[in-house]
Amino acid sequence: MTRSTPGRFHTKVITRGVEPSIQVHYRASKVKQYFKEGRALRTETTVNDTRDFGIGRRVTSENWDALLQIGHQINQRLLTAQLEACQCAPDATTLERVVLPSTHDGLPAPGLRFGEPRTMALLACLCSYQHLLAGLTNRSLRELIAGLIPGYGPRQMTYDLRRLRRKGFIQRIPRTHRYELTSEGYRLAVFFTKTYTRIVNPSLAELDPTLPNEIATRSPLASSWRAYEHQLDALIADAALTA
Image (cartoon, rainbow, N blue to C red):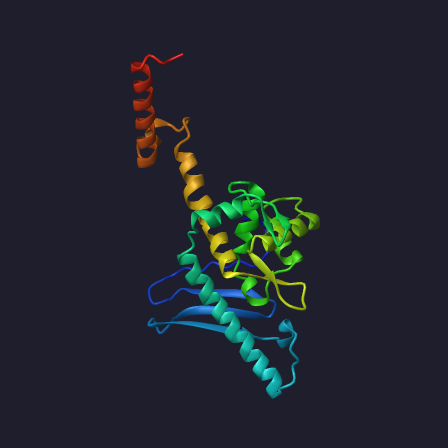
């Protein structure tokens, strides 16, 4: 993150007797998750301005029921997203369908190539919790991606939304210009992002041949890789296949 990264960020220091919490802000509303009295997980949505969701401010049974429905939906989407993030590994067929070009209802669906900077930025921004409140739009998602890829514009966002929809990551909310993530779309976005940031990037740094020996010896992965390369070179030399 840099100063130009859009969004609101909070840091909370956890001390003895203080329970951690998650807060997702959207306009004047928010969803909060915390441990109630340290015993039960509590998820609650607070709507401070009903117009955030296109609901009137008058106290009527119709507006009240609409607010209750929105609150239950947001709470459920947050819990569902958290559960899906724990079991996000796809099968080989699904993975192939995502990363390679395919067709959807007779229309081409360009592949989302793993490791490509634009693809990884796109999928990482899909994992943002702010989409759980009011869905995502061309503008809201584009602003997040532009914070990672300078110069990212509306045409690129339109193209990426099209391939996300054809790949089954998102679906349009009826009678709106907003989209929501599908269950499979969220799982795949989390899987790609976790794999790239927690496994691929750190591993490539440890496998760097220019990594100083004093650092490499402290890394089990780097030590094993260099031992493998040494044994492979020795096998090639014994077979008299060296250049």
